[in-house]
Structures are given as C-alpha cells and as structure tokens.
Length: 173
Image (tube, rainbow, N blue to C red):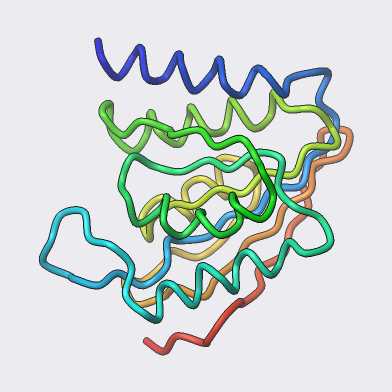
C-alpha cells in the first residue's frame, strides 16, 4: 500500500509539469561512484562527488526542470549539484514494488510532461538501460563498474531519438 501511495505521489508531482506532450529532452545517468560496496545505501566517494559536479556542469546552458531519483541517497547525492544549480523540482520514484514498477512509473510520468520540459533521471546500473528502453531508446546493459554513461533522448511528435555520451572522468571496466 505504501508503494502505491508513493507511486501516486510521484505521478502527482509529475503532473505539475503535464500538458499535451509532443517532445521532451530526457537525460538518464547512473548514480556517481559510491564510497562503499558493502553498505546498502552508501554516500558518494570523492570521485563520485566530482562526477556529480561534472553532471551539474552539463546543464550550464539548459538546466533540468525536473529531476527523478530513486529513494537511495546515492542517486539523490548525484543529483544534488544539478538540483542546487537549477532550482528544479525533484521527485523520488519508489522501488517498493520492484524495478519493473519503478521503470513504468518513470515512463508514464516522463511522457506526460510538456514539450519544453528537460528531465534528468538518476538511476542505477540495472535501471538506467531499462528506463532508456522503456522510453524508446535501445542501449546496452550497464556493467557495475560503469559510471560515465549519459543517455540523451528527445521525443518529438511521438518519435524518439537519442544518443549515448560519456561525461566526467572515464571509467574503465
């Protein structure tokens, strides 16, 4: 029940930006490097903090209007510099009902946004490719050691185009 309410809260938050959607710009990234591989919800490492700042710098010309994160603090800490710089609205997409429901909630919410909305989604190695695919962009699975992938999508008149870029310091796997 709690996750249903959380999902409804996310949908309500996204509805603040809703109108007849014909195009959006969506950026999807994985959270930055974490300080620990043994903790369930670790903070960012020094490299992760630097990557979060590099992410914020990408939006110097066009800041996000909306930032979507998971309940885990590493996604929120990765988004924090972009949030601070942009004054964007941030929503937390619940994970209580599993990854599939998380991805579907994000898909529905993003496509309900107005055509001039810029969205930043900060996810995890297992969710970033799934979210991109749900939004109509094919991408490879993401290995656990990869942090530098940035997917940029545009949707115009129902057509999705996209590209994969790298940002921040390159990661090697």
